[in-house]
Length: 106
Image 1 (cartoon, helix red, strand yellow):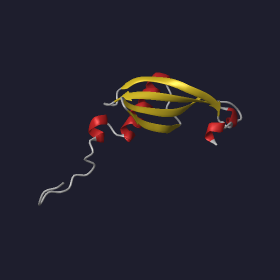
Image 2 (cartoon, rainbow, N blue to C red):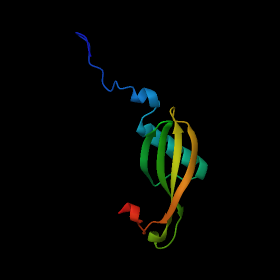
Image 3 (cartoon, rainbow, N blue to C red):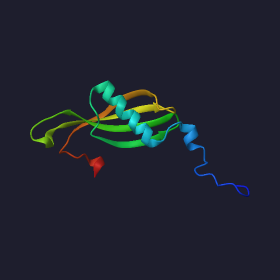
């Protein structure tokens, strides 16, 4: 509660202090890390989730270009970041053809 003459505090729930970085910064860190580790920049970031230990960011990369493009192979990767935004690991969680949408996407 703000006292007389004081401005009320915005976003004073401590969530950013606990995590160190926000979702946008986590996504940026993950993109840089995937580029460093795999030599490619993700086509899209499909998820950013705050976790107990920091952040999990999901990105999708072109792994194999084919003709037609609907048969391209896309890899879906998760990057785990600590509270300060430092990468602590990554893994490929699945692969799929660009033109083939799995049931979980419907």
